[in-house]
Image 1 (cartoon, rainbow, N blue to C red):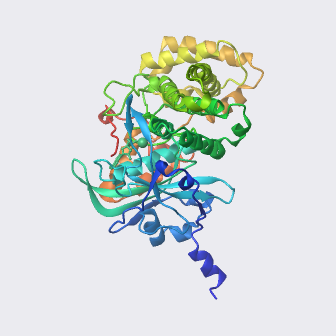
Image 2: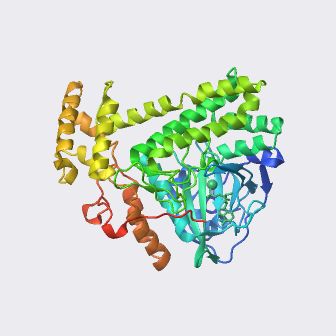
Image 3: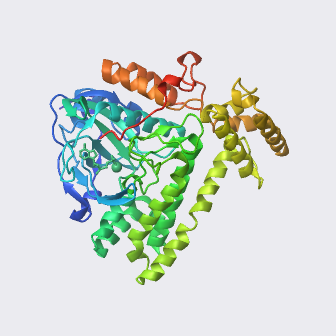
Length: 493
Ligand code: AMP
Ligand code: MG
């Protein structure tokens, strides 16, 4: 008999269920990850592993390298590549997981369900001309930024591990290959529904919609029109999500409909980045030539994506096409107000406003206009407002700002709460540290060029508690040096 301690050591804790694999076959292709030559686990998220019910002691070494590279399929997993479509920069394309494999759904001790997906795991029937692989830099980037969003309290997919494959991937030059293990409350996307709708098979579409409702919004099943209610629910989640992006200066960068998750989690970290200087026109992505996915466009783009979602569901919403359109429009027309409500609630917290006044949005917008004119740092200006005395920054000296400051002070004094409680609220609503582009680059360069992961580890440590002041000497709070600008991001394919 194996002694108990040994048994525990051997059990990684996988508890897979595979409900997605029970959907009609059109929604996936069963396929295993393509084995790699010499996997090595370079980053591992032990805390996330624990919440998933996994044993970090078992997975942090060779076993983790083997599982997270796809060389070993954990017991109970039913690997597959998901089929989906999507509007990419406005044009419809049939896509699918070209370089990702869903291992299955891990059931956690808390009774939650999370997709476990390997990204960069080799070719699939959806790879088109791609190699199915990923490079180390972009996979570390997704790891770092997704975990930073999580710590900021923004709904997101998460990152469990990165392994290097020991194999090169060829882009402009040869790069180290890597695979990211990502977790998500599901990988259902607006694009999954567009794919189903394009197949003109109402039974399949209904099965998919029922699956999404059952998995994410079970309370909608009893609604008189669950599919219309699904539109409203996804709209609400996405409005809330994009509001959190706007309130932290996050720019997703490639808000194609295949990168819009039904769950309302941020998904697909490619060319995303945080804005330093406040400017709604900020675009970092090298391929976003016309600024379709600029910071300030994100609310209207997600509304556009939600319209594609509603369109896909029309046949389920009502049998009369015109009636269905009218009903869907009724829901979609609520987007601007819904978004605005989330945004202003977040802005009030950022400004330390505990009660509500009708002019609060004007107060907030006036401040943003001053930031834009002064080319002030978004994160540091708001954090500065939360400090006991205003820090020494140019914006705080400007006449515009001083006028605004008087109005803000008067507004805060009108509320019943103490200044102290207002400041406390601000300190938990305005991060002191964000994954600034130059810091991310520095961390990735050390990891990729020197195999030194300590720079990334230190940065991630600070990012895990973004509302606490980072150690002064680390310089994490400083805006980028002029040499780091203009900053460009790439899709990481
Ligand atoms: P993304 O830009 O990551 O949302 O990817 C868009 C589509 O391109 C998805 O269908 C991906 O699976 C596919 N794709 C991206 N990179 C690769 C690659 N290296 N090999 C195969 N397919 C890829
Ligand atoms: Mg994508």
